[in-house]
Length: 246
Image (cartoon, rainbow, N blue to C red; front, side, top):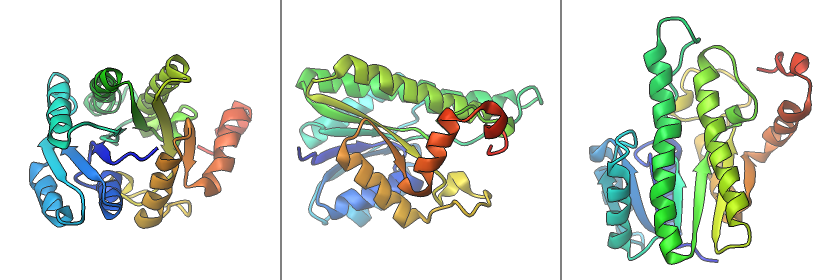
């Protein structure tokens, strides 16, 4: 099925911006949301004229009451939505109990509560249409609980994955599809400062991400190499072994 009308949150930078450019190159109609409206408007100017329409809306997903309003407005701007990519995320965090609870709470509010608000808004539209593709950008961090500064981030992404799995069970066989995408390390602002040989450059990471989304698989790890093997190890090896990998 061709999905030409695509809403992407967190589209002002990183993977969201990369996906917006990739889909614009395909001629898709885009609805782009982010907190930084100035960067969104610059992106709108850059992408306009490439074949598809580009609508933008300022949106802080932690203001949960504003999410369905923005989604409905963008749906009306494009004349419907075929796909919603829940991508907005935050990478703050600190070891639990070290006096920096605000960073962990903000991460969970954005990555889980904010994502839930987006899922609610998207699913309301898709149920009314009886069609659509919901894409949840989770993380390899969701596969197994991570320690120290990654603990809250890992938990928030695990919760997001669980929401997707629950919807997949509910909607199996229906015209509404749900995909949970788990990126590994891709070079974006959220991974600034991470030093690892496993880091993919942004262009190849976005290419793998878009390919996984287009496949509409229920669950996809990206890039597939080396993260498919790491995914299997984290899910099935004993904790005594996986602790050495984290």
